Each structure stands twice: as C-alpha cells, then as structure tokens.
Length: 212
Image 1 (cartoon, rainbow, N blue to C red):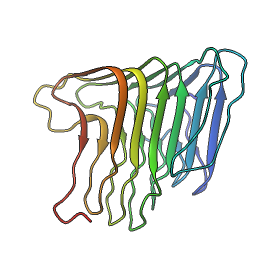
Image 2 (cartoon, rainbow, N blue to C red):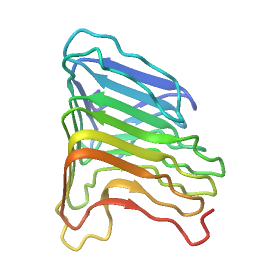
Image 3 (spheres, rainbow, N blue to C red):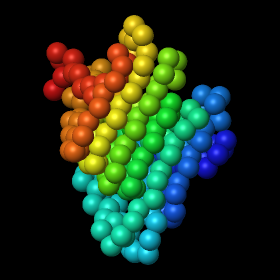
Image 4 (tube, one colour):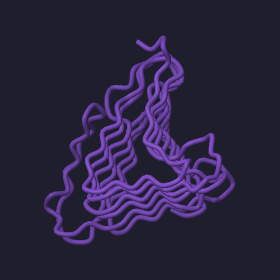
C-alpha cells in the first residue's frame, strides 16, 4: 500500500494477509487507511500455514502457530492508520518484525460508547521498532476523548524499541492511552527486551481525576 488512501464503511473489517507487508504514507498528513470503528488484521507470513481468524474485539485470538516463519510489516512515510470512532476499533498484527517509522495507529474512542476491549493487539515474534523525530512522531494510540472507556493496548514481542530523539519534547510518541473523559484502557507489554530512548519516547497512560 503506497501513496494511496483507502477508506471503509464504519464497522467493517479489512484483512491484509500474505508475505511481507509495506504501508507507505503520502507524506501529506492524510489518512492512509481509514476504518471508522472497524477492525484491521495485518498478517505477514513467510512459510506455508493457516491463519485462524476471529472477529472478536474484546480479546482477539488470531493464531499463526502453524507458520514456521513469519514475515515483516513496515509502516513508514507518515502513514496514518485510523480505526477511531464511537467506540474506537481494533487493529491486530502478527509478524516476525514490525517497523512503525514516523507513522501511527489511531484507535481513539471519540464519544460516550465504551470500547469493548482491545484497541491494538501487536503479536510479533522478533522486534517492534517505533521510531520518530522532531515533528514526525510515531505512536499506537487508544486515547478516549469522550465519556466512553478507551480500548487496551497489548504487546507481545521478543523486543520493543521506542525511540524519539526530540530535544525538549512536550509531545510523546510510543504506546499511548490517555483520557479526556472516560477511563483509559490498559497498556500491557510482554517483551524479552525493552529500550525507550529520547525525551519524546513513552509508554504512557493518564486519566483525569473525574474518570469513572
């Protein structure tokens, strides 16, 4: 997917399953993929096998155990993958490696409806890299802007590197679950190694005093 904008109707599911997956933004700041309150499945494989799909947004159980080797997913060039809505949707990733370079996954819950469960489920056998720089941040975001509860972010990987070398940064990139109303979702990270580098890099969850 390169320099292209693709939109689906609210609540729809888009699955990209195959070899290595590359999503490159146009650099103009528009949404590369837009699925309001939808579900996105990205699965990169590098050997024969079978993907077991489900449609759960409470606790996705997409299994790739039958594959001896998985492929890589690269999201670059300012790509914006947006599944925000009322409530936010769900993105599920399965790969050997994931690169999120100056690009974003946005599962914001914007209204009063509680998210049913998981906003982003990143299951990677090797390394996840979330890389940004001044003015070009990278993040996975499950923030809630209204009264509804935000979805959770789940990360399982061999290693996770979040790097945002931004002097004097007031913004943050990385894994974000903030709240301007309802309770934010949890961020659960299970990795063998973790690197967080730079003042703009964060795993961050905040809630207002009035959160439910």
